[in-house]
Image (cartoon, rainbow, N blue to C red; front, side, top):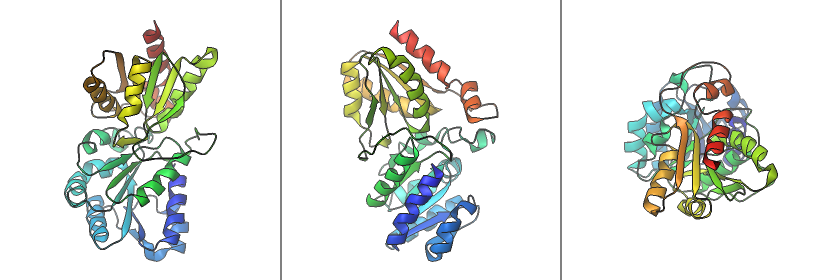
Length: 304
């Protein structure tokens, strides 16, 4: 995802001198091509995330389009006040890019895990939140963020995430995508964990269209229509996220379910505490109750 983001940003910035890449002293090496070819559109502000966002707000106020990039945990938590007051309150055209979504920095522990960002940022007025699930979707999200006038938070993984799309498609802010057809249960997810969901569902759907998979690639504004359709047609919903179940996609979907007013079976799969354990990404997900086996069991129980 990180490479997809950098390639997309490079292509856009090369054609539009208003676009700036700002980083907070992380990932400088991966910016080599961008920095060499577009030195006047690149700024490394050092380990100073709040200042970076304050600077980005000022640049946007002067007609620039800054993409401020660093680890999501340091943006969403450390610089929250600057996102709220300097960017969202002023409706500045700043693109906030948080890498390392969820527990993807699995060997670095909970200090580097971005597992509560949606809970905090989803409540901020004027902020659009994009959560792409694959490299192709990252590229489309970057383009959509660039074309959108206003604050955007782009939540991406790191690198080596597999592609989940076999063909091109239209990305529209605020519109979810049905990745698999199903009539009995709808699984709703966001971000790179969609690959795990697809793996599980494909093994179940070999005998027919049992489980529907919905990709909510825009957390805000939320596609309520695709969720309401799943309520009507399936009557059973499971949400899956590499995020705390409080405030994340599970909470967002639960709000839609409650206001829609139809009784259904509903389950959230996500973190209920700080993440624990270290190791490979899949190992950490398993240790924290969001691995494939947990989803398989939840589907089996709901089908019963």
